[in-house]
Length: 467
Image (cartoon, rainbow, N blue to C red; front, side, top):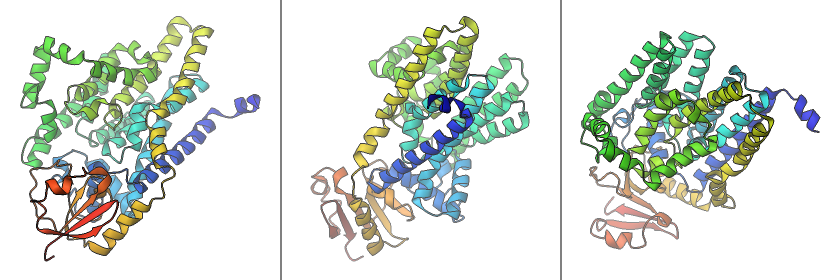
């Protein structure tokens, strides 16, 4: 049996893994949606933009800002997703894009392993490991976010750069900068690494990355939004604008170090590096120019989701760490001629991590959704079909809102994450398991102009009097 496995072409093993991976995570994200585990923030918010763009209303939003580019500079993912959605218009189409993007990225990660002449079984182990590290596992399960496009595009760009296909690589790096405003920092960091290797393409990449990142963060997003990006508020403890924030972080090193050396922040480093056996630390240049910029975006934010290792915020960091893992392992092989005992321990550790890592996010999420009869999904579907018109102004609780992406005017009423938006709702749909038991009583004055149109164990629908 073992001999037969050894005779299988490594590429075929990787392809088989990718098929299984896509099937497993596609099933997981679909069941999450059927089990009321997706939300208005971020799934329905993103899905609404994709739907409207597919209908010809480019980048139109409404949940948070009128134009999505005033929230995130993500023109490429919106357009590409809209093209797919136009062909297969369904929420599940959008959900399944993330596993597909990850599978494509993992394939290019495997090709990078082979390019650097890692032994086939090591390349396979690293590819499987990469699929289950928190930064990827959690991102692919979490609703939907355009940053996922960066995973395959950046890995493909690096691969084709190494293969000498510079125009293709440069084009992919440019496209990556159109995925989200901070991807340019990664591209610029990669460019600086090429400059250090005396490669002219590095100058182009550095200018490209910094230029698009700077323009999008400080001109395009604020210009469309009509005010500073709300993301900057997450760094308000360091200043009131981008320049002041960076200045205070750099010029007040004692305060910065004190901020970084908290148990939570040190724990975040462990979440990032432990799955890679700390091997990426060997590559100090890549650590400085690839890892640190994206790490800084997360670690200096007051928004705790960016450092809990359970959302999509670690995609760029994980790409950097995966690339550094390959380079670090190759350096170990070349420099100390890894002894058999060390190799065995490393391989066993990776296998153990592959077994353990799904307990971080995948297994808990599967445990919550398996055995669900999806009655709530069908119930909310009936409520929507029997009551709402596309033009209705609808207030929702977060998880109820995940199922209203086909409506144009949907706003969150619980939690109160958009206090600046003032509208009069035609309907208010609340999912009872996510709201406090006294929510209606505490907001009686706000809801006094509404009648109860539907009430069950799980949902309550309020309709404006006279509507």
